[in-house]
Amino acid sequence: MKKSVFFGLFAVLLSCMKQEYEIENLNGGTIDKLGHGGMGVGDTYPMNTAESIKKCLSYDMDGTEMDVQMTKDGVLVAFHDEKLDSKTNLSGFVNDVTWAEIHAAKYIVTPHVQYDIIRLDELFASLDAKKYIFSFDVKLYSHGDYTAYFDSYKNALISLIESHTDPAKIMIESQDTVFLNMIKAEKPDYRLFYYPASFESGLESCVKHQYSGITISTRSVTKEQVGLAHQNGLLIVTWNTHSKKENREAILKNVDIIETDKVAYLSKALK
Image 1 (cartoon, rainbow, N blue to C red):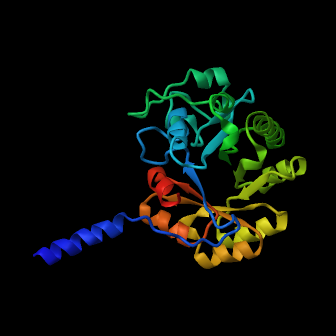
Image 2 (tube, rainbow, N blue to C red):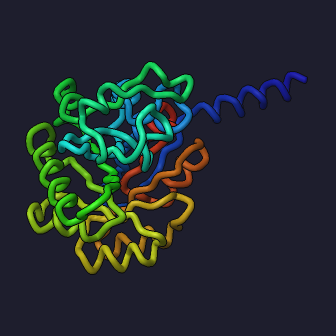
Image 3 (cartoon, rainbow, N blue to C red):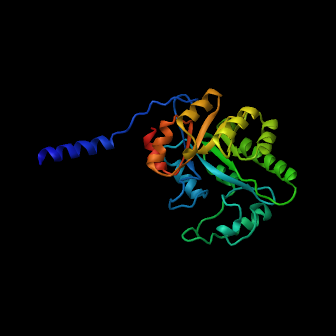
């Protein structure tokens, strides 16, 4: 009996000990720890809100990812879904309405009704923003002339970055190579990441356009593919790390950046 109790306690002690990882990547053997829209899916605070983002940054995190959209009058806000109808009392795209309309909008999804959609310039003005890494997941939803929309969005994004952040710490993620190339033409030093349908297509596009790396679900990339990306000078950013197990698996693949939904866990696992 005493022996089984001893071994039980020993097992618990081992499980509580911090695991040491030997990481080989393009990020100096470290992995940047980012929240997914702040604290991620399933937290008390809804993703992309000031509350979620600030809570994430209060942990030992390097920064956070956030979804970025542009209003009709050129204000950049944090909002994920394609249409406002899904979570608010407004309808259509974010780009269909002005900031004044967005600012007056109300969430209609319980229990998130007390939270506001935020404009990013005001968020960054309330933070020591230059000390953090921010990954902007660019959501390009609009009606009408996409050339004009892309140009306006590009100008608003560059203005935000240059005014409120350290451009060297900013990541721009997009599924649209046309938009990424517009940014690259004006700001060739910006870190641009392509979000592909598959690792193979991502590798091909990133090599062709000389982007910084690939952003991809951790479920869609292997350790060997991460190594192949590194051989081509490309960073790997993973998301869909909803559990401790998925976070550990991403670490063991030697990725460069993790956008996690388990902020408290990852902040301790990669101290």
